[in-house]
Length: 101
Image (cartoon, rainbow, N blue to C red):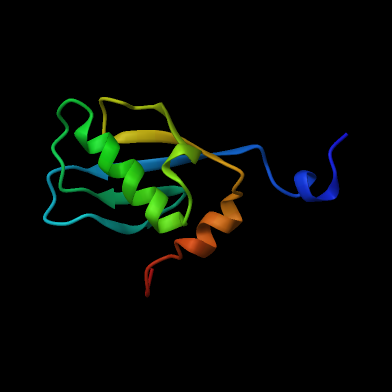
């Protein structure tokens, strides 16, 4: 039976991400509706961009990269990540909308 501490947090969050590879720098761009937009310098070759996205997301969220898993979109710009033990509200606090957005 779950305790209050475990019941308050979801097992995993599914986060939609739109990636722009081969950018000038790695950065979290903005939220566009429920999709997080990112730019990474890595090319989309042999999973390099996916690894860069995982590193960027983990750093922005303050979690270990092992808590992120690519669920869908390994070869496309639109990706779906599973993030262990974080809610959408916690993600939005850690990555707030851009000023004026």
